[in-house]
Image 1 (cartoon, rainbow, N blue to C red):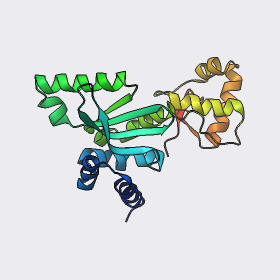
Image 2: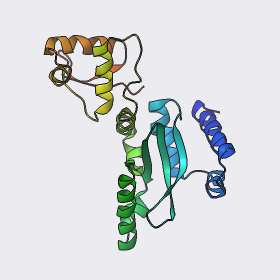
Image 3: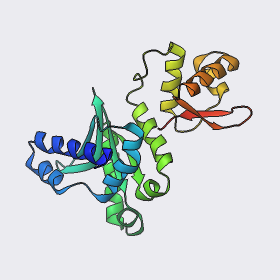
Length: 217
């Protein structure tokens, strides 16, 4: 059994054992959809290495006093909450009729009004662009856990990691310098150290590094 399979099985068993709602418990016992499992296997687990604060088939109420279920809810504590849904090509694009399209838009609106940060991910992106999806997930998590950094870093180094987590694109030393209010040369020294510590990677540039991003492995 792979590390993912073992962690996934333990995570699902805990979710089922702790669930008191018969409706959600039944859904969990049936197992998660193929797209959700592939997202966890190919994107979430390689990027995050655990399923902490992640809840499958999470039940939410809509404004019509009905129930809807998110593929995955990410709730690290406090009032913050994020929803992740895997959009299959068939039901969510090619075969989407007017009624279902309207319902999907209402769903997104209601989640936003209830203070959910919503992250829809296309199944084809999972299969075709898993590394890009990993960066998306890390940026998503960075919106919630901006303070979880190694304790032996200086304040500027720690803030650089937080800054990288909040972005979904590579950044230059000058961009970092403006954010930290330090010179480009100082920002470049910080970036070089974090690359040496394997916390950041060089995204572009050979002789002279140009842009940097968060390490996903």
